[in-house]
Length: 265
Image (cartoon, rainbow, N blue to C red; front, side, top):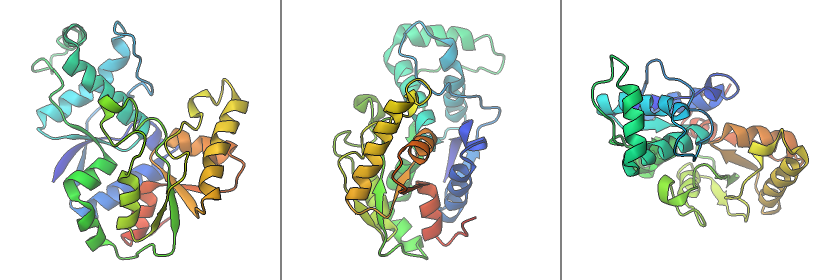
């Protein structure tokens, strides 16, 4: 199975392990991540203003590349996924916005035909659930994580806005818990698993970011978690730096790699 892959900037700098283990695990599970050529930063944040076109063009170019390859577009970073998924939805649902974007892109000699949201956008976790299947992952596990209590942290970006992301139930998600079970571990259900950690206000209001990240990590720790997992580099940074709980947090691809028997660096 081949899929177009958008790694994003952070996976090339501060979150290299998120990308590295995603690629290694995909090889074992029979998925080929075909990295899009000449991809550019997604912008990091989806700007809701309808007249803001320029910041969304790189996302549309990635979507077009996946369409032309006749492949779904897979992301790993939660922020990249949110931006690209919302951009794709805007191209599907807003004719005026799509027309303006296509007018810009038409100036590129490699642009073949107008884009109107044809590409399927899925997060790596959705790839595992919907295209590979958790049963196949269970069969591939060489090192079951028995006895480990893992708290999944969804945060904001994977789940909201719920209608657009369609990732899981925003109020009571289960995907990552099913993922944890497939690896042989015990998922820890805790109240703050789908609440914001304050990552986007770290520079503007450090005290609030500390308060929010501390509440998230404390919630998981109080429910008996050995460690947390996330798909978001910004959440990883904020919780590690500001939570003050000492609770370890890892990328979900790292624990998947461990369970599949891949050497952890």
